Amino acid sequence: MSKFFSTNPVYQNEGLTLLRIIIGAFMIYHGYEVFSEAKMNEYLQWDMFKTGSGKTMVYLGKGTEFVAGITLALGLLTRLSAIILAGTMAYIAFFVGHGKIWYEDQYPFLFVLLAFVFLIMGGGPYSLDHYFSKKR
Image (cartoon, rainbow, N blue to C red):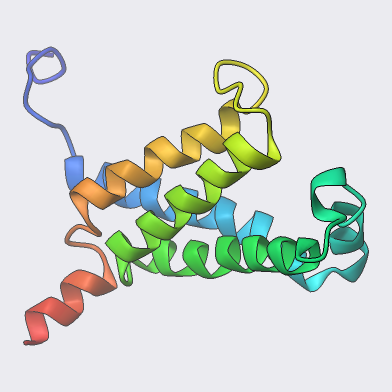
């Protein structure tokens, strides 16, 4: 019980690995929509994507979610994935959404914050980053 109330981390590496994999899985799930023409056409009906570059933005955003999700879940290029994910989710929260991070656009903004965790912490010992860095 004293461990629970101490300031020392408990299963820090395992907890961050589980969190990284779950966040990556969420991004893969959301990004997988890039392969659904019907779903992508729904996004193209939104006012902000009806301009000339709207189709590019929608496909780039969903593709980014998908690829960053895979690399984050694997712990491959974790910090780069975190930067890309933070940028994509910030764009969604502030430009696609209305920037109301306290209410309506809270979920994409939470992904921005979680991306910063992995930007700071890296992939950890249970990641491909760690595996490849040991081989050098």
